[in-house]
Length: 115
Length: 114
Image 1 (cartoon, helix red, strand yellow):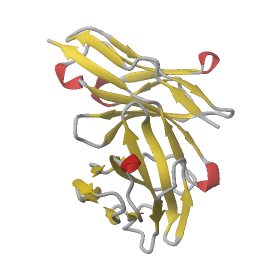
Image 2 (image 1 turned 90 degrees about the vertical axis):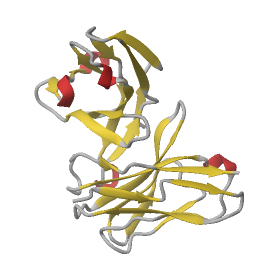
Image 3 (image 1 turned 60 degrees about the vertical axis):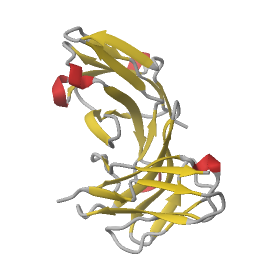
């Protein structure tokens, strides 16, 4: 069965600093990987996704992620964080079991941005 | 285009009561699913459906029932609520059976069982 690990429960960065959120996955086949963001009291919004091809994927709001098969990682990065980026971030791996995709989520990383 | 809508936004139940969480989407998506979100545990799949009349269990199905009579609606029923079902519930939908199109999430229902 697939699994996702987000080792950092909380991260605090200063506005304007760079950001990297870690994600490691376990899956026997080629993974379908996603990063979602959840603002307080809101649903989840897709930041970016990786299916195949270029291992560096660009997403919305200036985020990017790099797929590294050798490290089973899909870390999320942003060069300069804005105060509005404070939210909870979830990494997820998808499978095509039963003809429909199922998402297995990590436990999330809460990002705090200091002004 | 409202996307995925969920009602109610908040609900308080007593142990043993039943209720239905409503989910609707207006994007003609085949695939719909229910997740619960608990602190420190991320989102866990409860039930999903790949089309009208077809449902299947996810990771944590016990205590919940679903049905899919139309493409638009996918209600989640709690038959006899328990405190362990206190959680935030999210409904999601996507198009493209067998493919990896983006899942769209509703705003969530915050349920408290006393």
